[in-house]
Image (cartoon, rainbow, N blue to C red):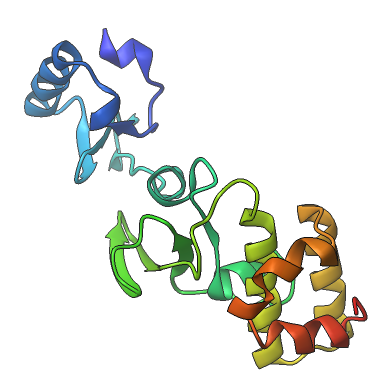
Length: 187
């Protein structure tokens, strides 16, 4: 049974289902056992007697649709927050993804607003860490770099395990990043 295959509040993606499983899911949707989260995404909610069915966390859906398999990375204020360069909590998730159809566009995933932008070059396993770090440096150049930001940048550099040599082939895509590299003492 499909319900036993998937944990409660776990996204189920239509493309992962066989024809037989899709028929079973349709029956579960019609009976109210399963819920549709968004286009092609479903889940089995936790039934709560006083507050109704639980909602699905949009984070795993965002990661699967836009980031999985070295296909993209967090960018913008989301990246600044993850890298500890900013404490500001963004009101939307910002991503750079090969799945972007236009330069920049917004999509709603559950209750989250997601800004998706095209990468300057195709993201692959070999360049994803360098591109994400350069994106961070590019953004940091606009917000200014003090001691707090410098610590966040160095923390993220170590977390990504990138060296300056890894960045060189992609510096032309992020011209402002050179200033940030100098400010944090990496060149």
